[in-house]
Length: 88
Image (cartoon, rainbow, N blue to C red; front, side, top):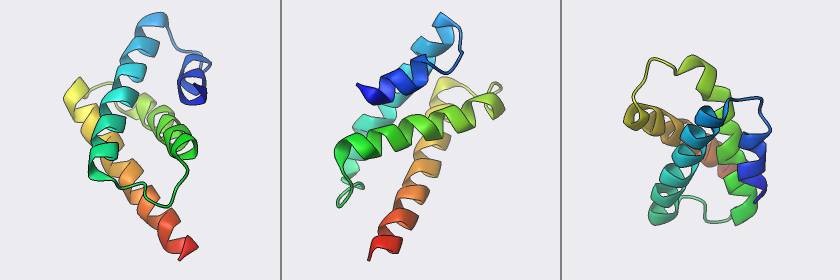
C-alpha cells in the first residue's frame, strides 16, 4: 500500500513507523465509517491521510496515541472538506 510506504520511508525509527502506521489504520477506520471521503479516490485519500500524519508527527510528541489520532483526523477531515469544496 502506498500510504504505508509513505510512512515507512519517512526516516522514522521502527517503533515510530509502527506507531504512525497504527494511527493511519485507526484514523482510516473512523474516516471510512464517517464516509467523509465520498468523491475522493480511496487510495488518494489514504495517501493524503499518510501525509497528514507525517506533517503532524514532529509537533505531536507530547500527545498520547489517542490525542494524536484525534488531531490527525481533525486535520485530515478539514483538508478533505477543502478539497471537496474546491471540486464542487
